[in-house]
Image 1 (cartoon, rainbow, N blue to C red):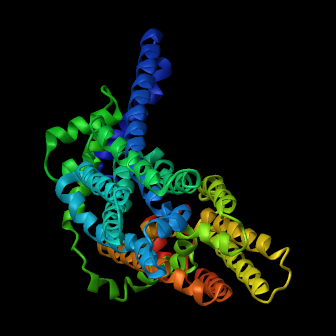
Image 2 (image 1 turned 120 degrees about the horizontal axis):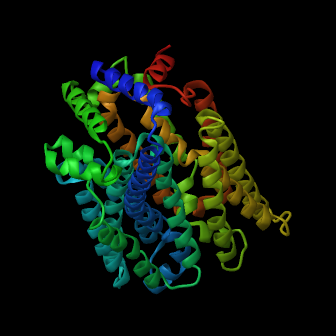
Image 3 (image 1 turned 180 degrees about the vertical axis):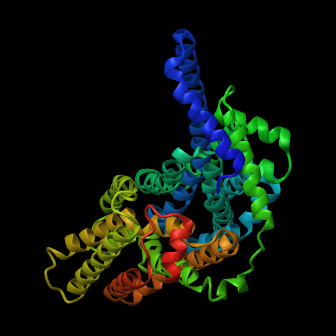
Length: 483
């Protein structure tokens, strides 16, 4: 809500704009225009640099998630791992990521956004080194646990940092880079893992956090966090770095201070408060979308893609894994473009229909192989189903649930609600990734048909429960949900 001072400031700016055509000294006007452009370019450059450094954490997230897909066969042979041991190795990352995500808010509020990213990088580097030097399951699992804890912190602090440093007009576009870089990291692991050993791939995983730590030396801390903890001088310096040395930051600084004061006045909601009748519907929507996102099978298929293609009849699984990796990035970009054109709800429906179809085709292909029918076509059908699945997931179900989650919760319950939703998401990721190998050994076609069934549930849930949030204010979204 605009204050009286904001209105006066706006009126004054309006009068200045009206007066500009009547200023005789055109040289001053040109000079001022060039100076403004230079300030804008300088501020955008620092925001872009800061974003580029932060999304190294997102790149690390994707690299860690994608690590198991191309390495399963070699790791199992070299370290003599059983199906249960590899299932634990693949899935333990989700347990530690869950812990990291739950504790990340407190960490980021205590040591700052940059401090949280640095701490996360230390955990990731330690984890990758443990995996690289592993001679057995214990060291392997320890390393995977450490990297998982690190990416759990990244999953919270990277989008928060980007949102807090970005100008309003750039915030939406810059925050979506987080999801793009996660997909890019996953694709890099898929592609590079087909040509290097699992130990070499672990060393490559060290690169993003190392780059992030170096980059942190050259970017400012979040001005909003500095204001929140009362470090006023550093707050002013950080905001000026991000907006330009000669930019007028007083209006934005006042707005940040006013927002912090208003937030401090709001009651702090706990988990039990989320079950109040006023909030139960957005909680159901947020939690339901995360359940649907995970139970469509994404982490099972993503973690073990190479073995799926081998089971389907491909000699090494590498060609399918490469195709999987190459599809993710461009389709994710298409989804980002469509997000504010078509809307959130339609993307979710298209995406869930596509994922449902993809896993149904894959399950049907495995059924044909089990019945010794259409053996010449079944492997192609299985691979096509997996690729349809990942393309459909990338265009909507990957990013949209997180965006809707940020839009549907009232401000004073976002902390508690966000923690609950993240916990449900990582818990679902663990269940699917841990059980996937056992399910495949039980029945390949049954596994994918089960995921297809959850796809149908997702379609029904989106139709019945999820509102369209595109172009609506927080108040309008709340009115829509509660109507």
